[in-house]
Length: 269
Image (tube, rainbow, N blue to C red; front, side, top):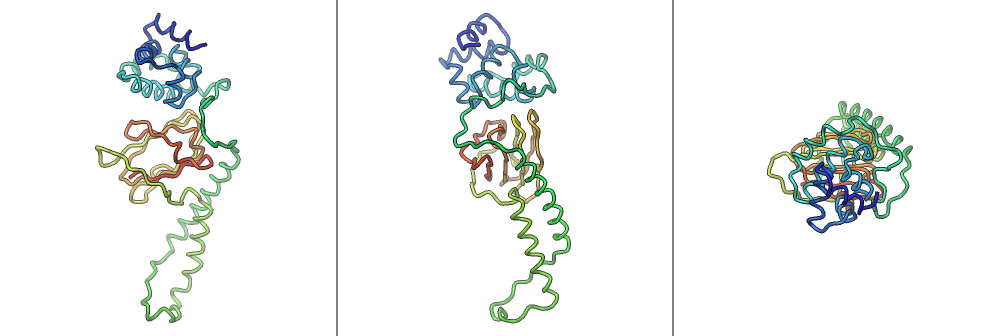
């Protein structure tokens, strides 16, 4: 369906898509402008304006799409979401003929090899178990005074090197445990900011709060959504980040500047 056809249909109807298209036209925006700003494909924008929800990848994805589109063109998303709920195809998987990220430019993106993520997930699970076992037996290290640096360590401290080596090996085998180096300042009116992940494609995500507690640590299927909150700074590691839409306090957050070989690592302060 062409952009002209969608606009003609929007002008004749009164559905959710028609109202979004009318608001877009009133702002002199094209379908391509909306697709570029929301980072979706032109075909997905056309499908939404035509109320063809079966051509979009799932109810969760479509609701987020409507919400962000409405805010972009200055509409209140609440009544649009209420009206769309009765027509959304709940629990429908993404349509094979319409890839969720088609025509979306992701600079420098390389082909995704899923077996790597499966192996990484397995390594993370195994290394996590090993780390927990060693951590239970680990005793706190007592710093030596400078004058005693050359004195041989007591016998009770001798088991420490294997424990440290095991911990180091665990860290190298689990890339998700490496602290991100990019810090991003966010404005939040609440003590614990909320993060909403919408998974257009399957993605591994780890989120830790300011106390180092894991808020999320799992492989998430396409078409699902996860929401967490906690005290900042929030550390994020997102695999296949190009297929994830992130909202911070219900505001769309652009992950593209923080993606390196399909993985985004950042800290939200």
